Image 1: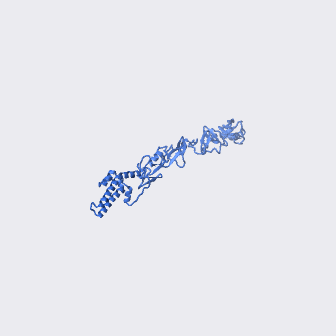
Image 2: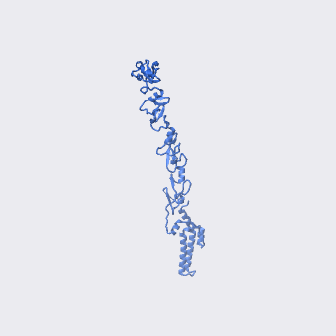
Image 3: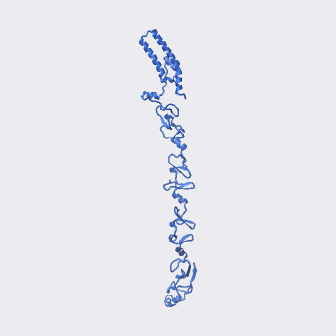
Length: 362
């Protein structure tokens, strides 16, 4: 692009012949006037000289003539006229309004002087129409823009080209970004539970197989289940019989008594306390109603601790010898014979009943 100095030189070369010719004519006219050949008065002579000098001055100083061709200049000198095309000159227009404008600097895009409105960005000056997006070329004079490596981009192109992509929708992330699951990026509204689709609250999230789950869904899907209530275990638990238990669920499955107070027994896959176990298997002493954990006496279709199998009259301990039963109660032979009339009166068949003691080991 030619510089201002080259334009000035071309203009001078174009008008130089016309100026020289005009000066020569002016000198001749002046000489003739001096000799009085035309009979003009002194006043008329001065007016002619002034008019000629004024035309010359206008020709040399008029900015409009700087871009005229030599032929146009010669035509003007000979009294002709050329139709001038209108040109926008901000400085002249400002002068007409009384505003004297000077160039603010050169445009970073076209390297021409910036006169009038100016955009200052990226440490440079621009014509408003030349401050454009480096990708799409649209003007960003009155729009938000982003800078990258010394170039300006409109908001849309910048996000499309450089913003991180959401792993859920693959769209550019323009505002807040969530980075999780091994460096993946998400829109805040797209970082949700893989099971229920809800956003994560204050409880955060749990990761499994490179997926994010809310607390409830994670425990419901992956946490061990309590053997008793079948609900997920989220905090402390007890391991027993190769299964998991809530501490509050680790109790007798018959009476509900916690096992931290009593012993536990496994009966056909069910955890029972000692009392419930013996009740279920029928090893409760008929006298004291406590479990029989050692030797026991089986008599009258019941079981007794050996020390609790006694005569119902004298409370003497019965042993492996014979005993008498009356009305579901055991008696030793001596007490039974002493009270023979009493028992015979109540039960005529009692005198003929003899049972033997059976001793079982448990």
